[in-house]
Image: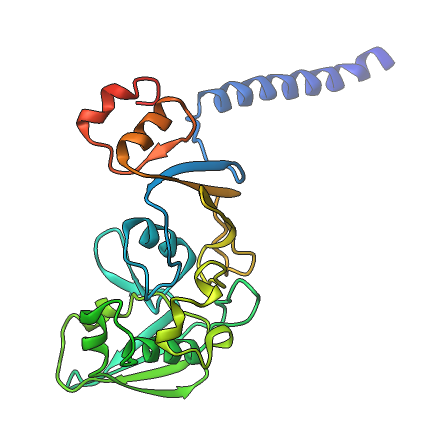
Length: 270
């Protein structure tokens, strides 16, 4: 009897084995999708050495490239060129087009752990409005016609003197921390340590800056936007020829805006 009782067990085991083989074959035929992993370092060339790592003082391409990774504004421009919320969760525009009320998110933090609030917006725009601010005359000329009102810690209102359709484009300006710079006039920003040791609210924070490079690491307080890179290094070069030569020697991993004429010079990296 025991021999006959074993048959159902053997049949069941054989069925399970067949099912496993079929499943393995089916899984093997499924298309695979590669997904990025976290970690690693990317090194890229920058032409010139940045002097100012402040959103309102950045002038050169090198400075603007770094600042864009360190600082966020009320809004940002997406890949399609549309202005979308960033530090702000949204906004309301009055019927006459003169009043813009922005509601700030309450989960955006500076790299030192303090929250980004309406006070930071007030300080940043106030610095641009300051008569001693001369870094960007067209920017200051526009903002000096705009009045500001802090409604509460996470709400700020702008009052225009006349309707201005591209107003939202101006609100992509990176914000600066009022708790670090409060009391510093626009004329004192260029010499302030903030330019070389900024407290940022963007995806990255400054890790190291010297005469040859700047190293950025993820902002540990950024809300839910963990970058895949563990480290981003920008090396400074005097001109594009020197940068392309470094790329050919594989001293760096990338150079922005390489011309077609430069491609034959870097066959290994192209």
